[in-house]
Length: 481
Ligand SMILES: [Zn+2]
Image 1 (cartoon, rainbow, N blue to C red):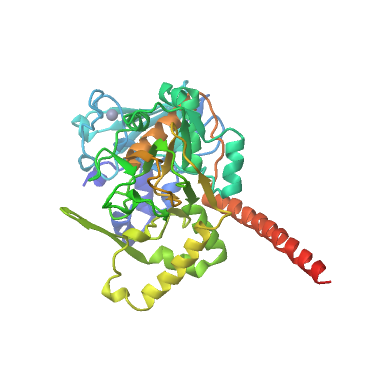
Image 2 (image 1 turned 135 degrees about the horizontal axis):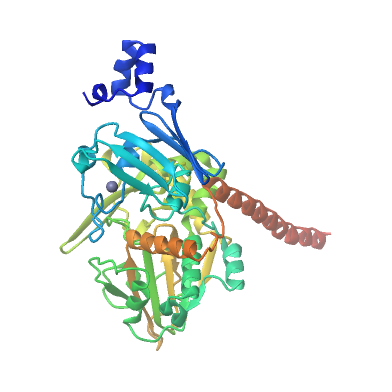
């Protein structure tokens, strides 16, 4: 009925020139009509140009690129004026369902300051009156990017898929380390460290006071602590009758924490208070890098780990957790994004996976483990008292070498988690900080570019391994002669 009531000149023209079958189709599939790209209305000013039809609008600034046409419904729904969004609570004052399928756009123009001003006729949320929506100049600029959404959190597109030599190179450049004082002060050094954390998933805070409450102060610089049944913070130290394998002095293979928990913690922090035992070096390996290596080298095994879920569980006392997760999780553009690896917390495979599925997974998982545990990929650090490591639990695996408990030595780490959502919120503050300071993103790497970095470093590794292998080989031959 709404459409019939507002037959504009272009719509009338269309009615005259198209069949009824076409109109019926149009009612069920809006925006699919190529004629929607016919924009009879235009407005041009010194700062920009707008053109629009019955359903969509496009805009450009100056004589730049035209934005991909945006439906009127989206433009009206996204109005952020004080009538539409409560300035105090930030809540929307109308519902998307209050709007007609196609709000009526009366006029549109780019104003002298570069913002886009839209006037809606017969506006439902305004009781039938006219309504004005303004998109600020920066938002018009953003509209040109089809992926833009107001309030959207920072994208991750600048990851460094490190192996050992790449990470050691970063450390040598002075990256991935920040003093406690600078971290707590929250200035430029804090933001630089946060960029390093976002890019590598592994940083170290140094010169931390020897107090078991400090890990909380360090974590809350990013966001609130994540509570689990281990408490707000927890201790990792050798003790009798350990209910968790991390509390003993045995070798602890590379793994990720709380794979049986929902949600999986985003960040883990470990503050070293004492570490005078022999051994006990911390090990880190980039799970997503290993996934990329598999994608390039062993695509079938990679597919198996992407498609098959392993089961994790924890059942002690009143705590009962169970979750099934694929070893490799991929993004919408089919690139590895996160991993889920924790052999000590795996439970039995489900009955229908007992056969070929389990064997396939076992073989592929063995290949994954071989890659993450390779010396070329593992970073080994003996944490010193006063150091706090922060790492992305969803992407970076951690483990620990065996240490000699007792014998006068003491080993005590204080740990906590921050949820992924709070970590991403900090990354969004980082993006805002960089934008406000005119700071450029250091790198804009899509999955393909990250894959390329992995490919090149794998070739480098191969060359180095080749040289290593050929050295003793030649010597051996010489000796025999
Ligand atoms: Zn409004």
